[in-house]
Image 1: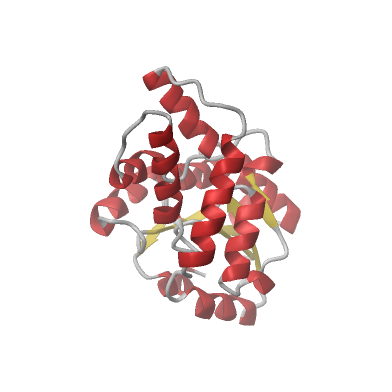
Image 2: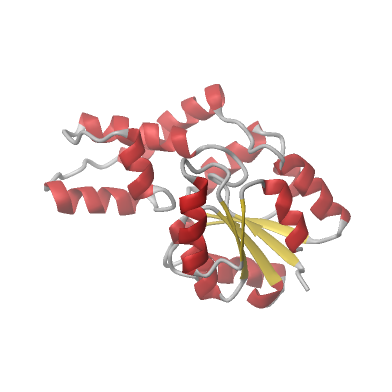
Length: 217
C-alpha cells in the first residue's frame, strides 16, 4: 500500500524545464558555447546545473567562473516570476492525495530555494512540508540518495513510497532506491518515445496526464 508520494518538481509539478533550459543556453552562450534549447533539454533535463557545467567543461575545455550558480538562480527567478505555470491537473491530484490522508514530499535536483519559489508561485506550497534537494545528500540523481532520504524523513520504507518522475535520471534514482515509480511524460516533447525509455529504465507505470497518477495509488 502506498503511504507516501514523492514528487519531482521540474516537469512534474511545474512546467519549468523550458525556462531552466533557456537560462542554461543563455549562460553557455555567454561563455562561447552555442546550443539550442532542444539540445539542452535532451542532454540535461534531470541533471544538476553543476553536472552540466562539468560536462561542458570536459567537452569544450571551458573554465567557468565562480558565481555562475548565483547567475543561473537570478535568471531563473526572473523567468519563473514572468512565465512559470503549474502542470495541468496537479492541483486536483494534490487535493485527492490529501483526501486519502497520504503524506507527500518533493525530491528535486534543483536548489531548494528554487523549488520553494516554484511551489509558492503556483500556489501549491501548502501541500508540502518537506523538500529534499541535491543540497541535502551526498549524491544527486541518478543516485538514489534523495529518495532514500525523503522516505526516511517521512518514516516509511522506500517500497511504501510512490515516486512521480519525468526524467531519465529521476526514474533511474527512484528504481535504485526501491520505490514504486510512475513515469510522467506530459511535459516531454515526444511522450510516446519517452514513455518507452522510462519503462525500459524500470518505471512501473507511465502516464501522460498527471491526473492518471491517482489510478496507481
